Length: 342
Image (cartoon, rainbow, N blue to C red; front, side, top):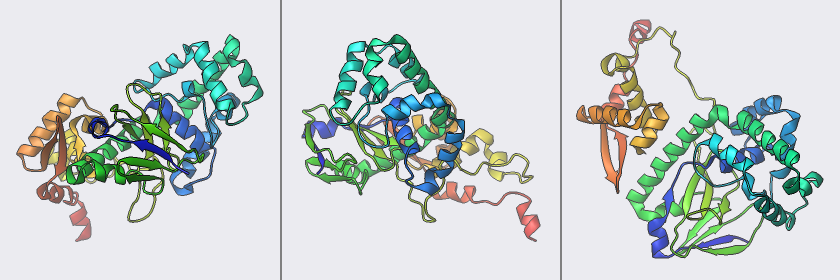
């Protein structure tokens, strides 16, 4: 059984890739915490999270189980500042809470206390405090890294569109669970849910997810268009790598970088980032490096003038890639390493 999303030509034209919605990604993290899949990728993160979670996290874990349904007001696909979205949860209308819980109850039992949630202000406050705590432990320390991985994935999807059109993009989202059978996108949901969604010219918002490793998710009520969450691919030639266990250059290593000496530290970091995330946009580059978009654009312009990167345009977006000269410069050994090798 599969969930089927039906596209028209207008839908294909309006389909785009966006950054992860914070609450949707948080719900994926909560589900991921409660299963044992991909131990190499997520094992150390789970262990660290379990040691930091307070008992009050239990309310959120009960309402967002490892599989099945969760209330939409806790898992919204709205895109924006995480703290502002957490505050919006506190202001959810009671009628919306009742509606969301009633929908969940059609498919699975609710925890007994949840039946009183819409009518008990103290209980709702406790739930929102639980949500804030879970966000602070599971997502907040890693949000920059998460958005960086998502930015790299968005660059990859743009290159797919350039190379093979929307067919190539939709056909490679999640080969194990998402199949593009034009004009229908077929999704094997973990819940086994079987239904049809006709986009009707609205298009589809695709959002890459770090934590939604095995479970594509669809929000059909998101505005202005439905949302599909898919897993970011982390296939590596050497196998899967641990989440958030990336190598960090040591300031005390003693080896001076010729690249930093030549270009300056920030511009060298920009070149490294473009090489690590080929096809990234200027906005994505700024997010990955942690600088303002105008500054990222200025550095990219300088690197392009030096023939260290190349830039192509897709619609109104500039996509940056390293050149052969840039890769050669990146591979130059640190000063001092040659002396040690002699």
